[in-house]
Image (cartoon, rainbow, N blue to C red):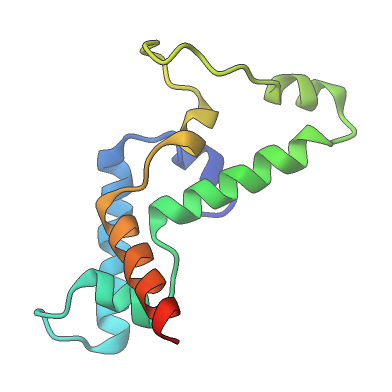
Length: 118
């Protein structure tokens, strides 16, 4: 999954949601959590990054590394100018500026609350 993150990050939200559901099921099975325990609580306790956050971080690392690569063809392929905001074609780096999804936002807000009380 790490290898294909820059490509998966460009996938539709529906495809990423399917991956998130699988991750949630693994978290639930690993902890033997009851059905009434929320996914945001599981992510807070286990501290795995959500799929959305993982893909964004992996994409950032990928673009940072390839920007300084010795291969000139790779550097030119990664050269990027963002399209106009009203442009309908999404390119790979658009994912870096997308807002977080609902689960990622909930987990981050819970983590911030925990950090303030620690």
